[in-house]
Image (tube, rainbow, N blue to C red; front, top):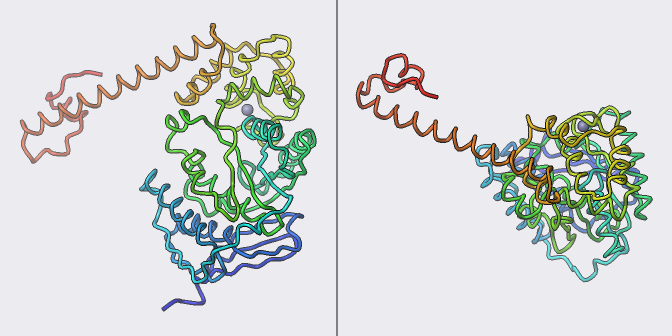
Length: 407
Ligand SMILES: [Zn+2]
């Protein structure tokens, strides 16, 4: 028997706000001026929010609002894929749907299409390159509550102005949406694209026919960066026939995106915001890992004057790319460096990047070798000293003389 008080999902549609009461103590809201006169024939967005939440809590949720058969199947695949990628992190979601419909997809044509735009390199490239080949997108969506927390006002307002400028240039109308959906996450890195898709699906009620969001990596980058939620495989589980969601920009790596933008849309760099660290200004600190990575990527711009101009407009100063390598070295990951190096022209910067990757691989190899040796020493030592001393660590073994000092 179901417990009606606790677990039947309630959805309320108000002017400017949609909220989903998932259970007694958990609710998700979406706020935007665009959420007016909403009409939903299906509630796939709320179903996806329920899956995202139940992946974290394992809570059993009853869903009586109509959802499409394809969405139910897709979001079930989505959840299973995340649990395969990170079994320890997620619970098996338990969602009971009583009203599954087969929608009439042919009657799903409006003139409104929306893509996400956060104002960074990936989404600016995705939006710019897509608008060149398919100018049917009419709106872009900036979400508050993901990278920028809901209580951040000054930084986010500046970011919003920047994104507005990019949207204007591309002929897109900007919609800003606030949501607390990240409260339901157990892993931002793995679940944030599900949440992006949820916000896009929400817009179906405001008359949109389809959506899109930007890839972080190329197909090869996906393989190297795994497990990561923004990959092609996960994207394939978030699109439905009632509300298709495209995955844009995976044909180019970060450096190639920078070069593309420099050649076709150099003016946009004044508004692009890549920084991960500094959220109080909505711009770029110039020093964090992501800013440093972007500086190295600028090496792909062949005209040195244009390169300096773009670096000035992004960071307010010009650094040697060698400085950027130094800033970057600590936190640089091999996959990111690989992604960067693929687009760099032959020359010193590319050599430095590939050298750095090879050094990291060698270091990993050394660590693996050490661990393997320590494990075999432990096995031999256990045999020697018998079962009473099973919990000997390599440190203890060294102390006992069973393991030679070796690092
Ligand atoms: Zn920064």
